[in-house]
Image (cartoon, rainbow, N blue to C red; front, side, top):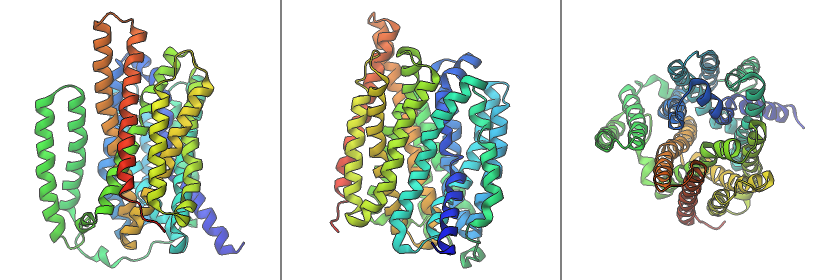
Length: 459
C-alpha cells in the first residue's frame, strides 16, 4: 500500500472518530430512565432533552456546511470538536434539568460544526470515481458510533450514573484534535471573497427551528400555536427562496430542488430516518421497565440495530457501484418497514434474541437508505458544495427524528391515555401504545419504499 493510500485511510479513520462525537449521543437514550428518575420528570419531558440538541444542530448544520465550503472544512471541523467538548462537559455537570437543556444546545452547536464537514472531508481523500464506496464507509463509521453508543452508555450509566453518557466523549474529541493534521489542508475558495449570505443563513435557521417548534407544539396539543408557527415557517420559506435566488453566494442553491430526483432523495431520508428512530425513543422503556432487562442488556439490544446499519452501509457503497442507488434504497426502505413491524410485535416475555433480530433488520434497512441518500446528494450537488451536502444529510435526518419524537410521543400518549380510561392496567396500556407507534413507523417506511421506486435507474 502506498504512503498516500495509507494516509487516506488514516485520515478517513480520524474523520470517523471526529464525527462519532455526534452519533455516540445514542448513549443518552439508554440513560433516559435514569435521567427521568434523577430529576423526577414525567416521561414526556424526555422529548426536550432530544429536541434541544436536535433542534440546534439541525437548524445550524447547513450553515455550518456552507462555512466549511467557504472558509475551510478542516478549520470548521476543529472548531466543532472544541465546541462539542465544552457542551459535553456542561451536560455532565448539569445540576438540574433546567441547566441540562442549554448545555444540550451548546453540544448541538459543536455537533453541527463537526458533522457538516465530515462527508466533504471524507470524499476529498479519494478520487471521485470511488465516491460511492467512500460514502458507504463514512456512513458505516457513523452508524458504528451509533451502535457503540447504547453499549457504552448502558455500562457507564450503571457504573457511574447518567452523567457518564456525556463526559466519555470528551477524550475522543481531544484525540481527534491531536491528529487533525492528517486531514486535507484547507484550500482558498474564491467564493469566500463574496459577501456571506447572512440573511439567508438567518432565515434558514429560523425556518428549520420553527419547523421543530411547530412539531413540538403539536405534541402538546397546542393546535392554534402550532398552526401559527407553521404559517411563520411557510412565510419564511418564501422569503428564503427569494433571498437565495439573488444572493451572490447563497447558503443553499435553490436550483438544486428543480431536480425531482434530488427532492425525492431528501424526502425519503426524512421518512426513513424518522421511522427508524422509533426504537431509540420507546424501546429503552419497553426493555428496562416492562421486559425485565437491565440497562446494559437494553443497550446491547439497541446497539444491534446500529450494527445492522453499520454492516449494510459498508456494503451499500459497493452495491451502488454495481447496480444503482435506487435499487439499494428500495431494498433498504422495505427492510426497515419489515423490521419495525416486527419490533412492535415482540412480547414482554420474548427473548433478548428476538428483540435483537428485529432491531437488526430495521437497522440494515436504514444503512442501505442512508448510503444511497448520501451518495445521491453528493453526486447531484457541485463538488464545491460538498459541505452543504453534508449539512443536508444531517438536516433531513434530524427533521425526521424531531417529527418522530414529537408526533409519535403524541400518538403514544393518546393511545395510552385512552387505554387507561378503558380500564386497562398501566403495563397493558403502555404495550398498546408501544405496538401502535411501531405500526405507524412501519407504514411510513413502506411509503418510503414506494418513493424509492421513483429513484430506480438500472445501471
